[in-house]
Amino acid sequence: MDTPIKRNAAEKSHRGSFRRKLAKQRSLCIAILPALVIVIIFSYFPMYGIIAAFQNFKITKGYAGSEWVGLKNFTDIFRNRDFVRVFGYTMQISVTRYILGLAIPVAFALMLNELMNKPFKRIVQTMSYLPHFFSWVIVAGFVYRFLDPDGALNGLLKSLFNVKRPVQFFGNAGYFYPILIISEIWKSTGFSAIIYLAALSGIDPTLYEAAGIDGASKMRKIIHITLPGIMPTFITIVILNAGSLATGGFDSVFNLQNRLIRSDTNVLETYIYQMGLANMKYSFGVAAGLFQGLLASFFLLSTNFLSQRVLGKGIFKYD
Amino acid sequence: MKVYRSKTEKIVYVFIIIFMVLYGITMVYPLLNAAAISFNTGANTTANPGIIFPKEFTLENYRAAFKYPDLVPAFMISVSRTILGTLFSMTVITMSAYVMTKKEFIFKNIVLVIFMVPMFISAGMIPTYINMKNLGLLNNYLIYIIPGGFSFYNFLIMRSYMVGIPSEIEESARMDGAGFWRVLIRIIVPMSVPVIAALSLFSAVGHWNDYYTTLIYVSNRNLYTLQFLLQRLLREIQQVTDLLNSQVYQQLDQSVVTRRTITPTSVRMAILMITTVPILIVYPFLQKYFAAGVTLGAVKG
Image 1 (spheres, one colour):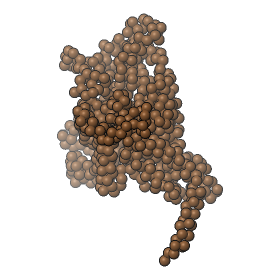
Image 2 (spheres, rainbow over the protein chains, first blue to last red):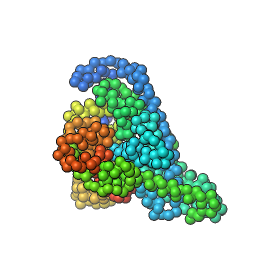
Image 3 (cartoon, each protein chain N blue to C red):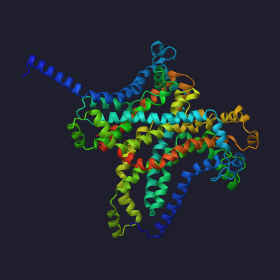
Image 4 (cartoon, helix red, strand yellow):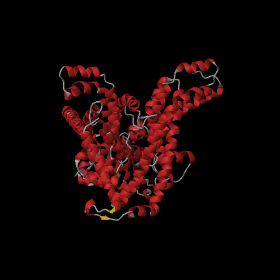
């Protein structure tokens, strides 16, 4: 039975021990402070700025002085044909990226795994992740050069197929989607395959030997040993990558765009940049950004939930 | 172990080898092409766009690139922000990761929540921009250093490595009277050198490759980074034409320009190579570490 006095005393001593602990852990608190301050200032402070989505925000007036307009910005963005088209294009790109980003690295890893010549395998692998470390600025530089009217591909088309006039790859928005997807695959496949190669090297070689003795063909070994061996990794990636389903990717799109085709090749991120910062329609940009942010959060949280259910751990490994 | 018996298997194997050779070529060809163009005369490149060796060797493209008044300052900004930014970030992350390995740390749960929430929710580009403006970080060198100081992914990797350090070593140091900071600097940091080295390399590459910060927050020419400069030179044809017609180049040996030894393309490729070479230099080290980094983190990043 707790009497009020007793409880009071317990609380007091609890508070006392908290204070003692705090005093003892002063160094810990000081050491965590820089990280905490950075996260709060640069990740949490901006969240306050979301209120601009409900204002007619003027940068000279600030959040306090700007006029409130309710949901007008949201009705504006959904009535805006451009926005709806950009959103569709973003989803088209992100879904393609999701599917190919799953299939191609797996296929690449499986093929690489079949190579018997170890030095050759290592050379190909080393080359394959080189582009991962180039910025999109540099990759775009390569792509421009390759597809330029007097670049290597047009030279090849001219000499092989006698194409008279060079193809203007960057003058026609229709070419942008394949160019973007192929460039992204070129840049990321090698690096994405690493995780599968790690899984493949973890498969017990005696399984293959036993299957060989039983007379299994190469194909049967792949179906019954290799694929089950990388399945857990594959499922993890299927779930993790779903978290970025609502993103168009600023870097790749922005760097591959140019003035001629910009308005037809925007994804949400570049569109928000254009409207919000370049054209200074802040509130429109904040509202569009909030819409995308909520969508992204939805995908991330569902992914996290799914990950906890299926894999037994959240998308961030913390033990 | 793998013996190919049937004919189909042999054909498939040959196909895989051919595919891999082609794949390897597509990985390095753009780089070789850019390098060759940067050392080739502009006029020759126009006739032979696909070269991988310079046909008419010249250094004029690089000379012209370095004559570009913004290039050397941008290079210096890129180098200094890479060094300072990486040092700052590693300091912040090492300290926070070590604290978060402590089970007795009273704020560990709340701090973890604070770190984790921004991974799921972000304010978006415009509110972030306005926040930077309010903090006085627009056109400020510190924008390159401070906001990127903490990365949750790097924090997770660092922390999971530190959790693996045997606690006996730390305890015995404590017995000898070493305090928190002494243990951190004398024991934890030296024992975490592999992970710190790996994350430093990744962080440095990230700093070097960043053009976005300049694009969004910086308009002052003196604070341009090399990536941003290259990004503008690649996108805006006008920029390069202006550059070639500018006063600096008028004073340059006129015969070089009139003989079309340098063209916008050849100068661009020279600047692209100047931007790429540092990555190529650290690539062997990166390669050694990143496989470990990927498996260590086992998170999306």
